[in-house]
Image 1 (cartoon, one colour):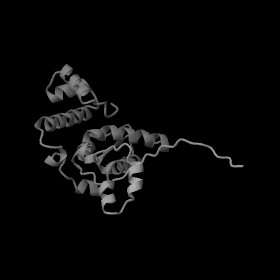
Image 2 (image 1 turned 30 degrees about the horizontal axis):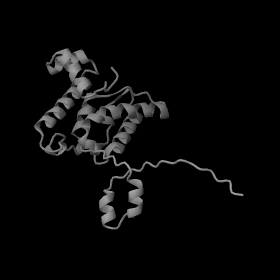
Image 3 (image 1 turned 90 degrees about the vertical axis):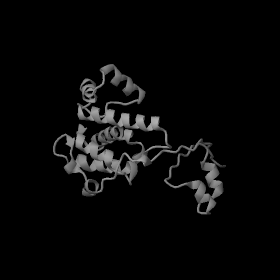
Image 4 (image 1 turned 180 degrees about the vertical axis):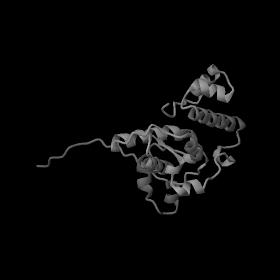
Length: 190
């Protein structure tokens, strides 16, 4: 007698490759592609969604705290500026490893430039080129730049919105409106 059980399974698969072209060239099985490709979610590389970096940093700092018991409270503004200029060839995994490394090396409760790998400090790539924007929409480019500048001001002020509004030379209510518009959360502890 067979003791079979019926189970319901969902598979989440991720790849950095274009599977449709892999199928075309015969390097990926077409039947498997159509089984996996029920819902296709395209996530741009980190260099194209720099506004996620502060949130990811906070997440990785919390992960390091839980896994290793290392209490790092913040990433210094100079480091965030470097992160914003860096090209992120290793994508989110590279950011996670850099935060992990910085947390292990840091002697106080902050990750500083000296805690970063040398290659990152040596090989800065421009962050604000035309390649960062999808299409040629001036409005989207302006909004992207505005969001980055707001994030930078919040980072500089340790998340203090009033000080950030003064630094940005805009009214406090205007800053709150823009924070809501771009769904910006406080990037770092004060």
